[in-house]
Image (tube, rainbow, N blue to C red):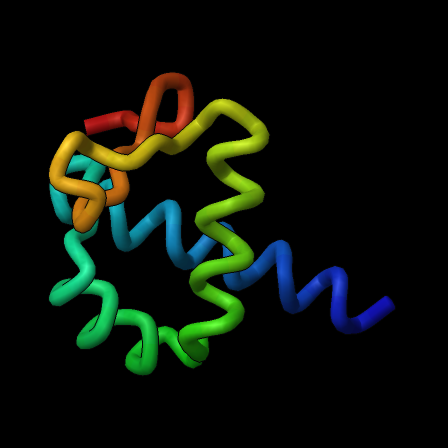
Length: 75
């Protein structure tokens, strides 16, 4: 059960970080910010896929920038 809570916390931290970045995060930003949030690369990839499946994120045409979509984007 603690794993699910951690996953929710990690997703919330990722969404908050993206909101602070203008509702987007490039691969370069993710490589710097995710370790600072305690999120490893496999977890970040899984979270981004979950967010895309939920319809709150998508990749920009460059395929290097994850975009946060409304209602998650509150910038």
